[in-house]
Length: 202
Image 1 (cartoon, rainbow, N blue to C red):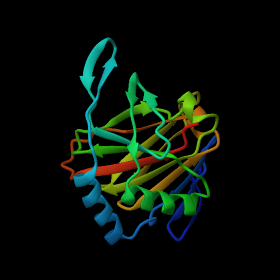
Image 2: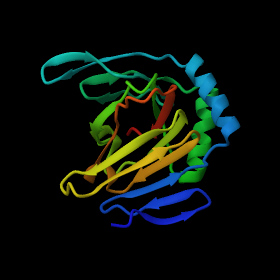
Image 3: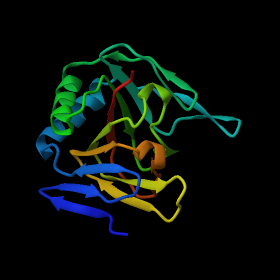
């Protein structure tokens, strides 16, 4: 299977069945991405929630934060998050994302991966409050990490892409219905990474 439909000026259209995924490797300049990373690391109200896995309670292997423009709650994996109002830097990043994606967003979930031990297991962003075929825009800042994809029903369809500092991954169409994704742990010694996933909650 040919994974890349086209690659032009840092833009890759992933040729994966039942999906619509575009990767922008140079969404932000290195300097701007580094400034955003530093400010978000220090200014974000990070929290570490607990999740239940096979009947046992664990701390999530990463820190998170939720911000929104309309105060709408977001629930996933048994966790209900209460958004704080968008601040200036998040509004600025959201505007850039909306310009390139031609979509609108009212919520952003931030993930702070402190090192290679922090991760995000297999899941889809398919919660009912996101509606059918949601648009998800994922901005990566800091250490590059591999983003894994696997088809829900055809296990032969797998793909991974290294999400670079200042990159944007845009997922829409049937992607969340038909695919799962993860950021796996790694034994490599890695500096921190911040990920912002913009979405629209109805």
